[in-house]
Image (tube, rainbow, N blue to C red; front, top):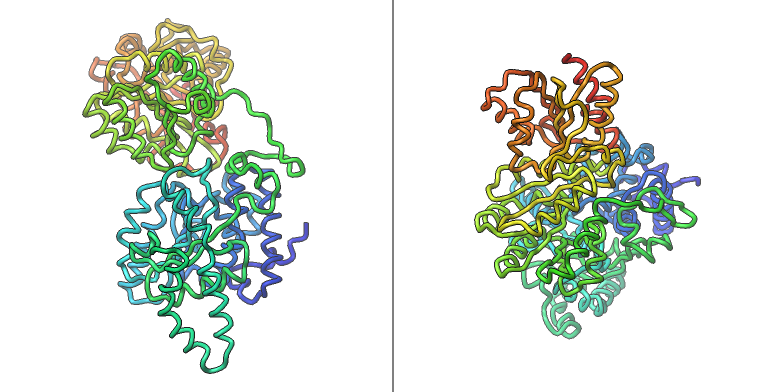
Length: 619
């Protein structure tokens, strides 16, 4: 396709001279470019398709980067990237060394804030707006946040503070009626009521446009009529909105796909000398039939056929196996409950939801609440299982300490996407859960390398004594070569020459790479024993006994080095008087950028090739 208008946009200033027809054509080209790229690279599609007109209108009205535009989560920023000088590189989206799928200030001055997690942008925006006020500048701060993010508690903390701030902070509530799955909770119902009564803003906007066209006196009449807005609104709404009670000037709801209306609304918001909340209704997946019909499937999607919307058939994965195993135990154990933070599909809990709806709880994007909610369930004798991505589990440290471990409550934490996640980059790689969980007493940690171990771990967790149990597993499925492992017990398994002076320690996904490495080393005449640890906390004393007299011990860990299991094992060996060579290979003190999982394993020497290289250089 010939992207005539889009290819000419080198900076946001280039769209300011476009008329409404040109802007609508630009939106069409943006959607086509998104579809073309995401169908090849994968990415977040539904949310981006729904935010095109809104993003174009924002850059039409505001002056980025002088005015800060902050996207909550950031997975709806593709149009923003295309408008802010990144069209020529957009084909590299989510590729190694290419554009990130989220906002990254190190990528562009127009990306005002790092993003990747939900419900944070109002707080960040309020901070930026307050700084502008203290610096006595006239810059605006615009926060774009979806209705799904309003299920997270930080939003309300920020709104509670921001309503009385007297800053130039404009919050855009991008309301598409869902996050990944359909939104839950009282706030979703509240928005549904507001959506049904759009008459106030439509009347107000059309009246102002008409009056402002009257020479000399039009603007003065508009200003006089401004004082009447409360009476008009109360007749339509019968009561003040939640946002106005907090101190915000509420505007909306308006059509988020009408460029002219959006521009008028944003211009009006700029004139208000107080924080503003503009409520915009959009359609998730707008402009692509398959995404509109099934926005959840196209929320985060791999490569797909653009003409048919068909994606590659999914194969078995750890997430689906978790749901399968929970459904296996739930019929005979009425205490098992499943909890998700708006990620029922991604964490494999859909089968449990359908079979046991009364014991399935979607708490929205509220991970901290999920943990303490689980604690309450556990306190009364239920067995909650909280399935959560490793990166989002980082939010729960305080709750894990005070509400779980301190009270010795039995909760199962099914930690999905542990280790490298890949193309979503720094904010989504699950490299820190082992390090922070290891600091907390009264928690057992399992890290299975295969479905067999996962099932055994879930079984053990269900039947465990009163103690929290974390079971962490990678994105995707198992590697079939793990079937060669010799299972000594639930806690660890081995492969290779038990009499060798060389020992390889690892856990989780790297086990399959280590098996390949043992075979390749054998072909080079180097023997090695692989010990794959399944129970990584507390670390099995039998393994320490097995390895303490080895000449060389190599630990390969798909996690952050500082505070990881590898460091703890090194200390234990020293305590045992270990006199051999100990070498730890793990992720150094850095955030890991996007690339495929295989590319990241190779980069950090955690693939078979890297393991062979590391060991060969020491022998």
